[in-house]
Image (cartoon, rainbow, N blue to C red; front, side, top):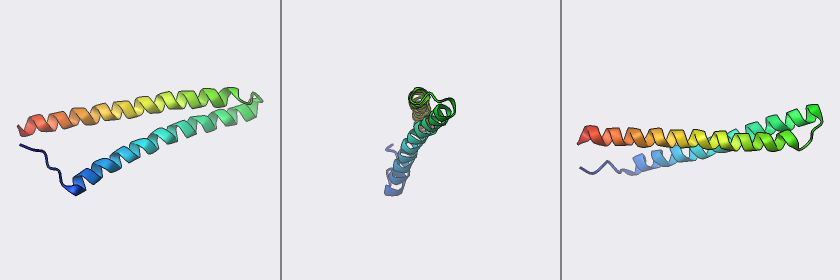
Length: 83
């Protein structure tokens, strides 16, 4: 049986991917801002800003990856229950 592909359902899935993109960007900006503040406090201008940006990017990527894996697994389970 084909999955339900109504426009509202597809729109809802699109919004969840947009939210993941904003989560990714917010994580990077948050860690970059924390690194910038730490640099200003310690006087080590580019060091912690760069480190914070890299740490934020890696952690944000992992967060998005794990969420997508969980969504994929949930979709597989739903298909298995319907069949």
